[in-house]
Length: 342
Image (cartoon, rainbow, N blue to C red):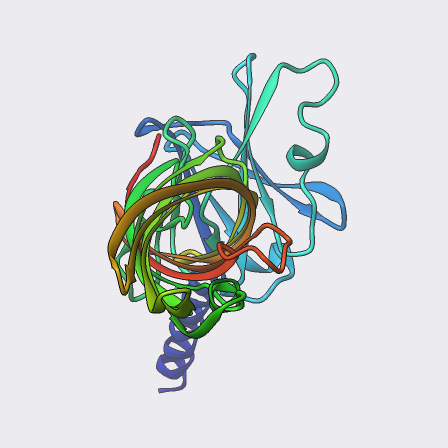
């Protein structure tokens, strides 16, 4: 009886040790276009020093104790791939607050190497990870969830095209249109809904990119004034176009959300259709005005599927002039289709 109990306790202990080790393990597999990569060194930046954690076996796999990084399970860990012409492969993990050699020094002295930052992070200790150095794609099968991949989840794609609905607040428009000599009454739109299209491009795996956009909105102005022959009116329809190009800085906040900030320039092109009604008759005229403006903005990306993304943001377009009717704050909601090099 005592012997049986002792054997049972021993077996239970062995089982518990196995489960505990499994819970503390972070399996990582390295492949090259789907083929296992043996001998790849896996390391991490800890207190500014690259610490080796393991080397992949013949199946491309290495298992790391989650306590090796001294961070909480569930923390997002950035991953860099360093490949050299001599065939050496390194996977470098950079926990929050750490800096990697790839981000600062590039290749080591005497090496012909290149570094690539993967666009999605490892959720540390939350399921097996596969890193493909050929496609630059990271896949993690998270605990209790379906597999998520970098191609599916990173927020700023290599190339993205889409359309948007927006609302522009032309908060100086009424003052400019109505504060004129001789006008007895005036009504002017202070804002207008609009439509837009955009094209985003990311430079490699860096957080930098460019964004090209075109926006359209329509504004109306109605003016009443006293002419020499009696009361008269001006009705003005304005077709407002903005064509802008901005540099973008984007960072991932989570695997499914990213923040961006941008700065650039815009060309404002207004087509004004003027209808003037006088006691003696009616006249029509069409005029155009074109000028350059500064654009600054910020917003968020939300990937919603492998090739789709929702983007929301706010932009300020200004000519730094209190008499600039085209100065506006634009709020936008966009849906885009994404292409990825990987």
